[in-house]
Length: 160
Image (cartoon, rainbow, N blue to C red; front, side, top):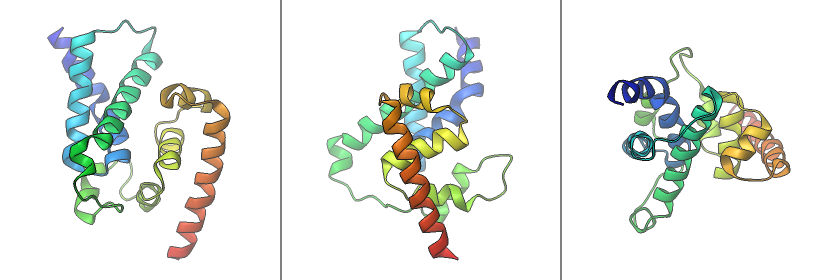
């Protein structure tokens, strides 16, 4: 199991980290969530139907853990930043992209839009898959994608 855990770490840590970061907007919390996701994999040892199911389970687990963290008493009693600070941006770098201001604008959107846009454009999931991951109806995902695109377009035009 140790070799396969290392394989899962190399394969999914970054995706779990980025998915968690879209919600918690904090390097340390996103790392904790990504590590907890891998720990859950080790503890529960789910049987996967394929690579897509595997990735979806990892991302869904990371996002659920991030949501749980945000709902925790500790998070509710501490101050958080709505905008990702400049110092935190280096931790969210996508290797193939030098700088992505659009991504950081997406991270400023409300959670319901942010999650859908991130999974659709950055993790390349279909609407059906996003609905499964977020455990929401497909029409809700479609609506949130549309409204998220509109909000993103408005924010980007304000910056120019």
